[in-house]
Image (tube, rainbow, N blue to C red; front, side, top):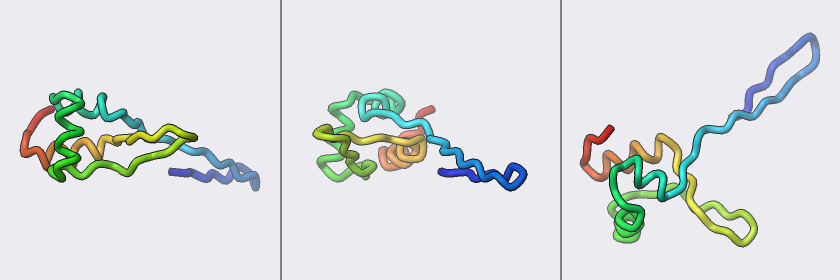
Length: 79
């Protein structure tokens, strides 16, 4: 999100980025293998974040919120 501060008539804009994870990192945080997570996504058991595109590369960036949602969809209580 973007924060704007007013410093004596001068506006300063600062962008803060949330921590994001690759699919492999998200799978590790869920306690499963990356391929298992990808299979569950393909089967429709877990709703993934949208695919991001940078140049010719395509990938998913998972936030903590995405990982928690996936954890609930898995039916696991894993910390």
